[in-house]
Length: 178
Image (cartoon, rainbow, N blue to C red; front, side):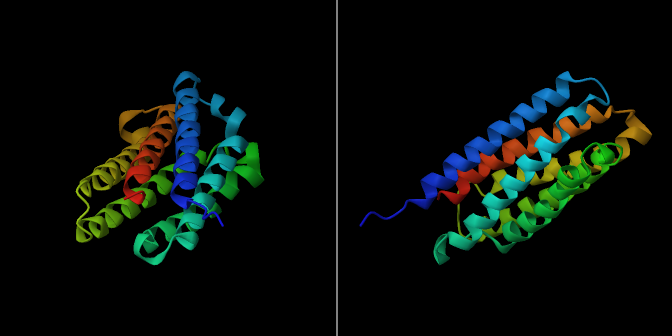
């Protein structure tokens, strides 16, 4: 009887999600301010699928290779956040940047906390999710303050969220495969 190699399945899933987040980042960079409403529902679907993959990995992975409980918490939170663009669609365009920036702050905090667990497991590149997490926290704070201090367009702040999420999934591929 063949045993299913879950690591390979999760790697393929994470590469696919990272590619979608990179594509969303490119769209948001190239779109004008306010044009991001066209793909708000697909973005919510990508977020929900990404969160579901995180939850599946946490539930299915055997004990010594199980990700941090913080990954589970991030997955649950992301599922709820992704419901806003899926259910509300175009109605949530005005608050989308704010919601995504809060998600970015939470995601960065989770990645930073998870990196300390990798350090305790003596994983050599434990600092990588810490770096991504710190950048996510800084991007979240910068994007929240951006409209008030930096006059940063919404499409660029959303693009930074998508870019950092894509990079975070690439890092997950290498860390959870160890």
